[in-house]
Image (cartoon, rainbow, N blue to C red; front, top):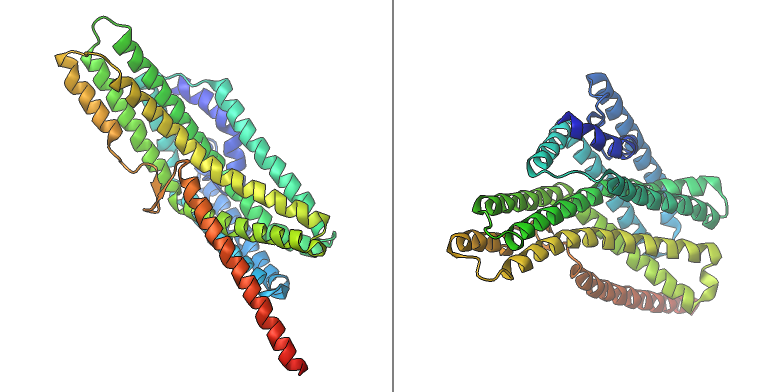
Length: 379
């Protein structure tokens, strides 16, 4: 156990430290910080930064959002409320897991030991570095472009960064853990499927006990996938709501900028394009890593269906295995309605198109009413 624990801690040490500072992981995830004093300090830090975030969001709404035109004002206000709720859900998840996270790590290591899985340290470390590099690149670009778009007015830039940029940075860090868990599940599923294929295709007499063992390992990984998605379901739903709203608002503003080039200057264009890329990246990443797990499950199912004449003794075990993989255990369903696979992109695109048309119709109607009122006043 300890021989496997130390390499895992070395791989995840940087991610754990950043996550603790960002409030997206409990301080008990660090083996040297599990005392009551550390927990109280971490709780005080979380309360302080969340209070500061809510305070900045309030003043950004009062001083900036309320000064915008009607449509922008409503959508930005709703988006800000979603960010406040989303940050609260992330912190609630952090507090919920403060006592359980050491047991979760221990169960993962024990499960790896039972199935003989050896963690590829270099591959896992490279994956984490790439994800953190993407978060760092977005943060730097967002800070720079936000300050530029606010004409270097420090107070307005500070409110904008605190209200809109920082919540996305925090949620990005939170979902790095989510991506890592799903990627590790997919790698373990691939290993189990490879072992099963060797057992069924390369041995003259496949062992029924081994196939049953592989079936139980697949069931365990499917159940763990379900637990991961259940733990993150509220955060995922809120993230999709925020991304959907902001994506369509930015798309609408880009359309207005193309129709009336004088409405948006160069920093605003760059700012909107950056947010479009960020929201598309977050949504696609969540669906992509869930799809990777589903693909490994489908690969195992195709391999089992392709076994010719497995024999009477193995047929019942293989049939149970196939039935297990075919049954929908809703491990990729969140919120009771959202199925996290790449097919869900079609649903999002249809909904986005409908909402975009609504924004255009609202804008046209609002302009017509405004002109009508103005002409009546003139008369």
